[in-house]
Length: 168
Image 1 (spheres, rainbow, N blue to C red):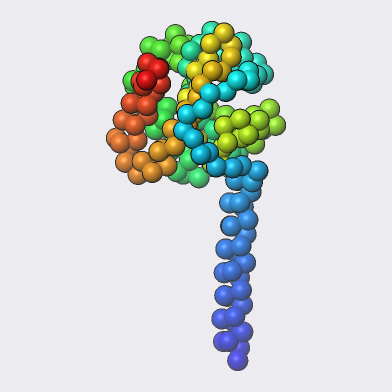
Image 2 (image 1 turned 90 degrees about the vertical axis):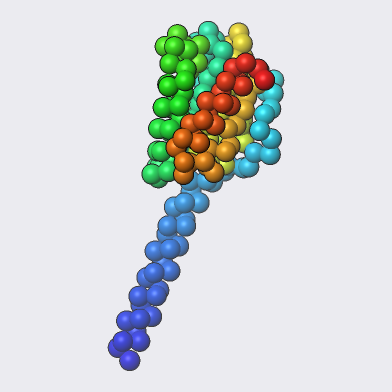
């Protein structure tokens, strides 16, 4: 009888832990919705506080959107993205023609990006800016399916960024 209680208690604790983990994971994605289009034009000006002055002089901004708490995969996506951009576009980054902007969407000043881009998880977004106004953007949504292969992931980011820079 004591063994049965112990087993039932262990199962209960297992389900309790699973529920807590599921709740924590759902908090990460709360208030976000799926993107149905990869490339959309945006009519409104984006004002991301102090960054708008720097963005006004640039053409392309590569945003990596993340939450406060990040898993190993999320950190890997950021690292691979940054490596790919630095490797392929180092001079453009150095000249601020291309900007790399990792942003925490859980900070109040960045929460508007969730709605602006229809974010539902961590994302790599390319944004074309002219005269301080965003005119076009693209979600590189295949990063999640390619994260298991660094070479394919980085090739994808480089290829999509070249196409976006060249307005293709």
